[in-house]
Image (tube, rainbow, N blue to C red; front, side, top):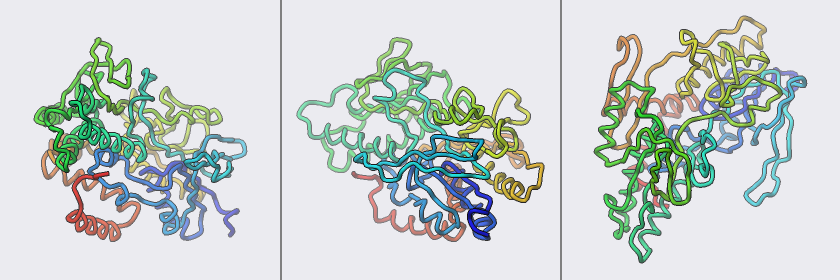
Length: 441
């Protein structure tokens, strides 16, 4: 049977969920020529999104953790196409991918059209700046590897500038203001506290890390980590206090400028390095996808089979979807990596049944296994949920850190397999002994 006659599965978005799904479908259906699988993403490489704060802080070299989509597609029997989807024609079962341009604005790939039998949207989410004045111009988000590397360069250049200038460090020059005290903001703050001090030790003798380098978290809510148990939040807060990371709780940001951040209470926080880590929304283009139903943050509305409410041939999962949470009628499944992983596993079964024309499809029910917050070299805290704990079990320290690391290993095993992951882990353990602990450029 030729590729044109095979059932064509198109997956848009190569984040953790989309990549895992493409790999598993390729290894089963693609390898046996039972379906054609195409993955579309706007980037050439993949880095696990929970690692972006480490790349931004400089504690991780992204080149050692990148996965190249073209190579992954070759080894796992699916096709990869570079580009950004921007249009959909449901009547033709056709999607359109915008032209691709290089850094000089020269067109590399023209606009293309892809027909599908089953379309799966897995485009993730972006930070939600809520239209705050200046946020898009003066604050850096942490949605992509490029943004993380840009933030690292800005911080590194700021330290070098402060080292070489003749005048003293001015107010806000080396203050990093992180808007949003959720897990991402907190993990970034702790990682930056460590790496900025490591950087200052490499010949930046004019900078006093404790005096000149400041980090603060600005949060509109009165509560730190409101989605997690109080014991976890209290433990995290105690660690942040030890690091002298300033918390501004109950402060709603009203404007971001080149000089700093203004809040609704009238407070001005001087900072030339602002990071936006508050709120999420799905990509804006989803709002105009041939009348597919979306919510107020652009998430595609799906039912418990993960099929969109207005087209059973189109599925959506992960952060870009709003899926009902059985037992919680007023809530949808939270946008967490564990949910995307569970949904990807379910969709492998669902797509196979759909191709075989076997219905009904299985329904997704979210299982919460708990949450972990990693404070870099300082601590890891979290809570686990399940039958073994009889509810919530608070953990911290080395055990919590080991479990946090295991989440990444599970992702690697999903896309590389056990033995490749084991060899990659061993190689990184060896090379880390000969490398600087922080990226110096």
